[in-house]
Amino acid sequence: MLTVENLYQSYGDKVLFADINCTIEPYDRIGLIGVNGTGKSSFLKVIAQIDKPEKGHIKHADDYVIEYLEQEPELQSNQSVIDQIYAGDSVIMKTMRQYEQALSRLEKNSQNEAAQKHLLNMQEEMDKTGAWEANTEAKTILTKLGVTDFDKPVSELSGGQQKRVALAKALIQPADLLILDEPTNHLDNDTIAWLETYLTSYEGAILLVTHDRYFLNRVTTIIFELDQGNFYRYEGNYEVFLEKKAEREALEVSDQQKHENLLRRELAWIRRGARARSTKQKARVERVEALQEKKQHQTHRSLDMKVGAKRLGKQVLELENISKSFADKQIVTAFSHLFKRGDKVGIIGPNGSGKTTLLNMMAGRMKPDTGQVTVGETVKIGYYVQDDSDLDGDQRIIDYIRNVAEVIHTKNGETITAEQMLEHFLFSRPMQWTYIRKLSGGEKRRLYLLKILMTEPNVLFLDEPTNDLDTQTLSILEEYLHVFPGVVITVSHDRYFLDRVVDQLLVFQPDQHIELFYGNYSEFLAAQPAKETKQPREKKTRKPTKRKQRLSYNEQREWEHIEDDITALEEALENMSEKISAAGSNVEKVQSLFSEQEQLEQLLEHKMERWEELSLRIEMIGNQS
Image (cartoon, rainbow, N blue to C red; front, top):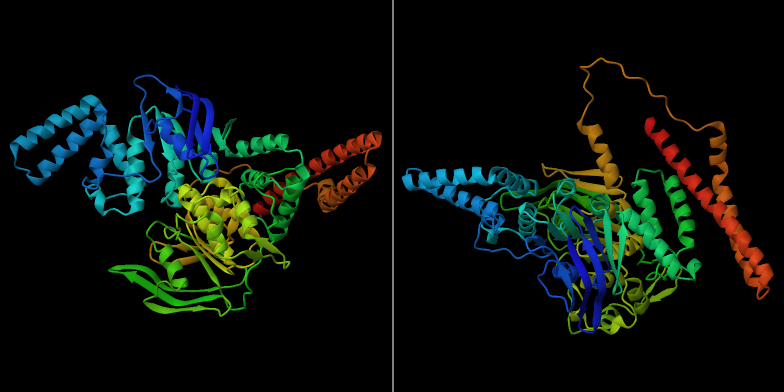
């Protein structure tokens, strides 16, 4: 067990966290959540005892071992991959390192008797320490993470490959507590799915920070939250956290009906698993979610985002037989596609398959070897790239955004000021006068994202926008893109983000072919088994026939009227609010009206729950056909 007592840490004049008391017990699976800049990475470093806290203590047994994966790990560039993996002071790590060195020496000089004898000795040591299993597991982990050249020098690896090597090292080191800071960055979707499975059977405790909400929901069983210097602990995964946080905020905020609750919408998506729906069903979901949100308040969101954009003509973007290769590697082969107004497209594929290259060709930053890219005359591209944030540390936040635009315009012709947009993206009015150099890495990425949106583009290119952004910022971005009237084209490995934002996918295949799929990422995954596997016909044993589910007559009648019932109840609640306001200081009348209002709210809640139940039933019935 690790115990934290009265932990306090600040950065300049900003208190990151104060008076934190908590414990980490064996086999805990803990997710750490907080807006960028609240001190998540600082908390991890203090727990890992890389940094010392200003106040407080961390207590554990003398033989307690902590393994820490930094967000941007630094590896020894003069070492090979396998040497880096086996770096460590434990007996098993030393034995495996010495065994690999002995094996390498013998491979260079197979006739050397001394080398042969040394290898035999090391094989005996591997037997004694039980290191063979760890050796096999290490190489399996590397292979699963996409690193196959074990003897390659670290200096020759890309940044993403180095992150995967560092992750592999962290996973195989024997530890009581494994701390992971954004472990899914630079991993493709298949690798993230493997990592989820691997961590569920990890023998020690786990404390992690990640922006991947599906990953967070499936791996963790406890949530720690840092919020404006305060620390909260929730028993449960991300889904439970959303619900309990919403309840906590509802108690803290009195004026609940003036604000929407973004957490409720996220919770609804998690619970439904983002299953396929028709356009009409999606509209029903949004209506019910809006009703659920109406009673709640989200402290950081008070801006109505009826987003506008520059007028977009009929012609948007057309790719005609474009191809691209680097050296001897073909990246894109004879790809054609027509992007239309309203398209929300995700680009997915393994790391290094050419996703960013495709974006760069569409943006005019790179020319295809063959083929043509045609951009419509009215197109105004906003391009969010991974690395080029273009931030001047000596500039104030407000000036950085005002240099782009003082205001942006809504679809209704109204204006939203730079200050309001900054508030919406979690930069408070006082914070807006802070120098950029004082921001955390995640805060800088959030500010850069806002700068792109302030240019009022009508075509958005987003290259891995979820990296280094916190879950709350991602929710705001998803809400923005949901009402964005232009075209969105995004490269992302974040499955939750893809499910919420896109309705089409461009899928990079191993043969450089790019396949178009209509649907989000979860729908794409669901479609794969049907394509790749067929039911064997060898066994002729008959299984009991399942009766197809269907709605009863009464349920069908209920479904036909339930939306009208919900609308009527909503209108009744609005009328009741007006009556309460009109009652003024008449206490008895107000109390009576409040009682009626409460009954209406309970009835509305029941109707909404019933609507969701029937909606899911109808969806299951549709899947049977």
